[in-house]
Length: 335
Image (cartoon, rainbow, N blue to C red; front, side, top):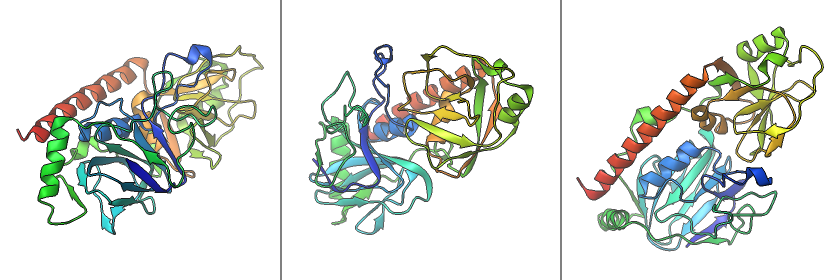
């Protein structure tokens, strides 16, 4: 069991979401930063689909009620156990009774806590992801609260053996981290300014030339009104070349809708299932994790790429994750 001593600002159980139900009006949801979620799971010998704890900005305090193997990936929220810094992007064996705390965000804004065996809450429509607006998934469909207990599943044999060996040589310390980690070229760099690769949206040609140039040539600021549903962006006002109406159609993560006021909204994990606003752009899948880690006030610039280029980027990322999974398995086995 994992016991929540302090809940943090917005701490939930998340996995890769519940695709396949959008046609019925069910939000896909899932981890805001699926890349960090996947890597954290791989580091503890889990399937990428296992549930993790997602914490935003002000992290929780988590007590481990049994010896556990964990990994932290994503935003650096200054994790520590009994005042000692806990390294990220590597496996960490933790003794029973240890409390994981978080401090101020040093980079990014969302951290993923994976535990060997995964967070074993009940599935709803094939997913353990929390969607708070419908009160489904996670723990009672809500953000975690003080006193909550989360069950962990059974770790893989290699993960269990590695953790036991690490703790046996820890000389009484509360945790023992691996002396290896994810390679630097696979660890994202989170900054307050970022260039996001963006494809033209299906209604890009509806906008005036001035607005099209402003979208791909200007700078947008993440508003404080942003949330898991979408990031509201402040920048040049975007206008259609002439009044037009759009029937509601399906939307996906990364779509940039432009309401009548002209301020774009970049849709994220808990986006609605359909939308009737014209879409000027579509962020590449590989860059969505970078967007998810941007705090209010961060600056975004959009660089146009083709659909083919976006597909190549995604295939390359999948290849890198597959190679990382194999490398971690070999490390766990002591090869």
